[in-house]
Structure formats: structure tokens, C-alpha cells
Image 1: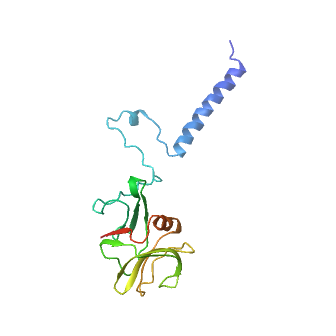
Image 2: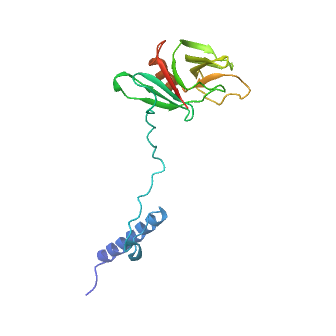
Image 3: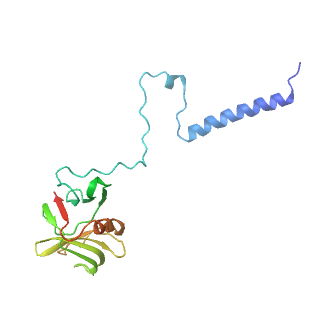
Length: 182
């Protein structure tokens, strides 16, 4: 009795697919289960996902209550806390060379566009403190290039990307609370 040619070809094709699949899994870094690997008594940790972004930090507990802007000096981060427990926006910022003083402050002025003390064209300027003979304010560079300030300058500019600065601008009026933490 002879084996039909179609059965031989099918068997060879199935064998080749099994070999190619095994090689592809090995090349892709996937572990191949062997009797030794599958007989281990301790479970292996789940693979980490290097592209998973951790959630942003929550609003600090010691930052006041109600609608406010919270600015952490140590984290170089701002939280925009709207009224009525709405969604909180948070993002990092680039502080100037003169830090804000920790504590409660109030917005003292809004300017749609200006030139900063460092010569940068800025927009959505929100002033909230005067210290060390300079104003402290959130602002966005018109070109959206947020960079470290020249260390030789005496500036209270807290630079923010335009999309984020719009959140501060839209959620403050003169008299709004800005709470600064260390």
C-alpha cells in the first residue's frame, strides 16, 4: 500500500509550518515552552509594558480646597482644580530662576500677550505673586518652546506649553487662588 502524494505533501507542509512557527517565536523573544520550563513551581512575573504611562500624581492633599491652581515647586508640576469636582488637569512646568514663595496667593493680573523679562514673546500671562523684586507668573511662549531659563537672569517666569497654559488662563480670573507647595 502506497501513501497518496497529496498526503505526503500535506504532512511535509504541516511539519514545515510547525518549524517556521517555532523559529518565529524564538526570534520574536517569546519563550518556547519546554518540559523543563513548564514544570517550574513558581509563576513567572507578567512582562512589563515599557510604553505604559503611569497615571499623573493626584492633587496634593495639603493644597487647599475648591477651585484653585496648585503649583508644586519640588515636582515642577501644576494642577488645575475646577469647581464642583470636575476633571483635574495636571502637567509639568519650567520654573524661572526666582521661585514662588510657598503658601496661598491670588491672581493679580491677566495679559493676553507680552514680552517676558527674558525677551521671549509670551501669551496668556497669569500673575500671582511679587517677590525678590520680580513678578511670578505662568505664561506660554508664543513659539511653544519651553526651555530652561538662562541662570544669569532674574526671572519669575513659570513657562508652560500653550495647550496647558490655556487651561490655567481659562480657569482663573483676578482674585483666583494659586496655592504654592514646596
